Image (cartoon, rainbow over all chains, first blue to last red; front, side):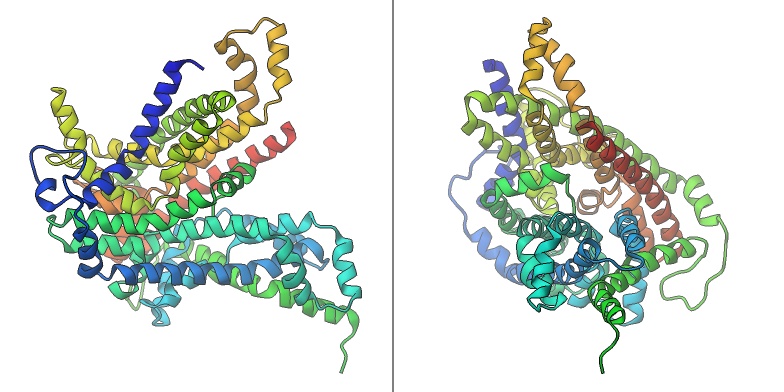
Length: 269
Length: 299
């Protein structure tokens, strides 16, 4: 490894990290240091009041709670729907099983954006727009989840489940007390991708809600940006830092698992 | 009353798979059918009636300057993002792979740094980019000015804006591709390099072209399709930074579908945009399945 290559790698990493650095730096700068002809890299003093402003000017805490409710709701329902279906596809024999798996594969071809207009129409018809229900329900049928869990269950020995049946366990109990705990690696990988995708999504919250009280974190900072007249850059960047931190922290904490998950399947929720 | 055994088994199957089947039907397959039908109508959200207008929405999309702009912009965006997001990711992966032999700690830290944009909330990071690229108070133009270079208006120059968004797209996807390339590099058996050395390929570039590049082939194809499907979906940066402007210079397919459908309520026309987007994505994803298959056969 030549020193030049190492230098180039360090330089590249610096460019990649630049927006993060600038976001944090601006979030801690007093306003008069942001709007100045001479731009300094670091704040002269740490203006923590930007964070206080971010939490009081917009309901930032509410946005974060909404993010947790929506991501949590989506993940729980996705697993409730996907796991039993995946188990049936992998470990049971029934007419139409192949056709059902074909449907799952076909479903993988459909990006969410394609279904947005009819789902919006349906929710409007049922007068359910501007609810948590509208933010959660379009995502509960995760074909990606069914596919992932099926692959995992298919690799498990059939004798294991036969033994459980002999012991008198119902199929439902087998799914949740034996198969699902054994599929824990698949479940964590799926959770990482599902939560990342929905915490960061702007498309659907922009369509399904107009009530700021229901805004998810990205929708919330767009509200904040649109409401402020361009003079609240510090607090806006503070809000951006707050919204970005949970996933970054989670990634740094579970780094190995995340990168392995991507490498084994090129997964994307 | 006890049902016969097979009936009970079928009931269990239905209990296990039924909810998911119903959810898929209602949330995926019915909407796809409805959007296809709507694309041949002039339906507007909230209207009581609609008319069949045949291929008119598609004709508008392909002839109207605004519709064409959304399509050409999307294609430019994809055409810029794919080579750079892949090329840079490959260079970084090769560097980190070589670095890991002598300095595993530094290599792991740099890998985390390059991956960070993938985990970050894109909307928040887009705002950070907006500040970096701000014409007067942004760091980028300050540096360029200090070097005596011109200071472009990155997000409001019509000729430049789609490339600026593409640069942000590249920044965001390099880390993901890098992880895939690193996995591909780790899977190359070391004895292949030894064999190549015996055959006289001792220099770095010779080793790369005789062993690394051919062995990375399946990974490269896979990364190309993943990058393309992601790039076609570009929405968050457009919605946050430019709203397709100035003068539709950064309009893209998914943003146009959002604007026409949910700001102008032209459900029929937006459905036609959706179908064009869908057909492009299906073609790409089918290519991805074929690539995946090849990847399996390769081993």
